[in-house]
Length: 174
Image (cartoon, rainbow, N blue to C red; front, side):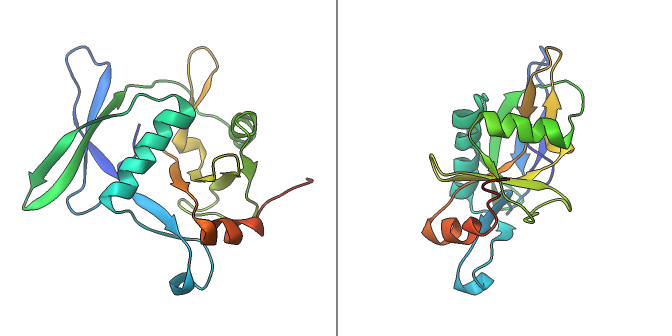
């Protein structure tokens, strides 16, 4: 599920199998940037529409999710993005379960880098240069089969500048 920070629930079909979501007018969730304007440090900022759609695509590709772009609409004179996603029910997960899940997908923890909710974890996978931020128990769920599922990580394909900045947070050898 995509968090209310990026979108709000607008409909639940009769079979209750999917949530339909719409971004807040003029907003498209969050992304992480790094460059001269951030002093070379990774920083959370509002995402552009293409960054938001890339985030959703990465969620599908990396975690096997089933997010659908339903369309673009106009709300109060501003464009909004309409998506749908499967309803996911389950129980809370621990930080250890989140770390174990991400490690199985070759993500390395980024130590002392919390972007998003205070205390959230962050990860990086050099295999495809994807960084995952805002990993906290509210953004994961464990389904009835005990499978851990991420539902609202901030996913970014790291450019060269962000990759270099993330190197100092990698916990290699720990």
